[in-house]
Picture (cartoon, protein in one colour):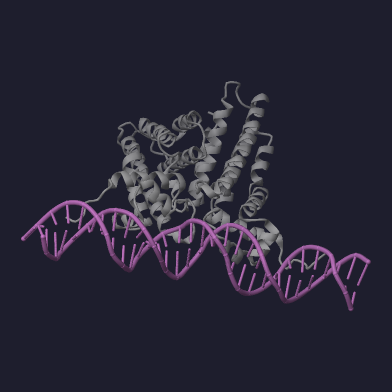
Length: 193
Length: 193
DNA sequence: TCGATATATTACCGATCGGTATGATATCTG
DNA sequence: CAGATATCATACCGATCGGTAATATATCGA
């Protein structure tokens, strides 16, 4: 009951995500947010808590909407095909024209003032979670015999995540999609070697 | 003539560099800077211009002091040995304990508000300059016959710079040196393949 | 010793930061 | 209709932002 909300929570959240993605947590002000979301400050605080909670919700939305290629790639039965999809999906997502370039898990708070250390820690945890998921998938492939027994799964994982991270930053700095696709192909060719 | 300066410009600049490196351009406030540099605002402005010019000077110092491994690596006569040194030098520098982790050319302003777009463009230009230097070195090696004629020099360059960038971000997020050394070794093994 | 010059110190500027108190307004239940 | 309730809009909060005006102080050349 009470007066009904006059905006779509999901539309507003999408607008906030777009800003955080492009300008980072600290590079996005509340005035930027309320303008883009089309709501006032009190509405923002009543609905989303505060700036940090809004970021967390935007991050959750990002993971579900734009990082699903990661889950799909890890579900691929063939490990080689899976890592190929991981790398090319990364390039495709992070160089798409209809949203900001790069990855929110990098752009959000690579560095920050002490005020934003909580947001940074959140991002760090999500990065580690994704890394663990990839590590588990590679380890599984090793158990299944898709990779040689002497293959260093941890090193393969770090290599993959490091290349993906590099791709996201290059994309954020404006590198062309075709160039990054070539990087993805090269990495896909040698990640387990 | 006039009253002599009571602080060492170079020491103060080193302190500013440390802050920009760790917290980025926008994550570092003037109060942070004056405290760490041990000088007052008017002294900072009289000596360094303003915050943006101070960053530019800090960036120059960074390139000369901490990115010299790049110049050295490109001067290596053997291209394979050169790229190995590039990648391992990158890891060693960006995971050293006596200064912030990661690379100023990434941490400085990966994303930012519109106010800092000038700083971001500066960083972007320096990144492109370094990339061109690497590209020229690889192209030269191709001309010299150290690389096969059908080798895609542009793709090799992008791969190397992307891995280096990924390493810097992983380092900034706290990844262990040994893990990144393994990444560097793997990349050094396959960059031209 | 006396300007001239350059730095140091203090105190301040308007603008913006993230966040909120207040009260009007619209929908619910009864 | 009359509360109860939740969202709306306006106006405001103290703190901090990058940057500066005003002035005291220390060194120079003459």
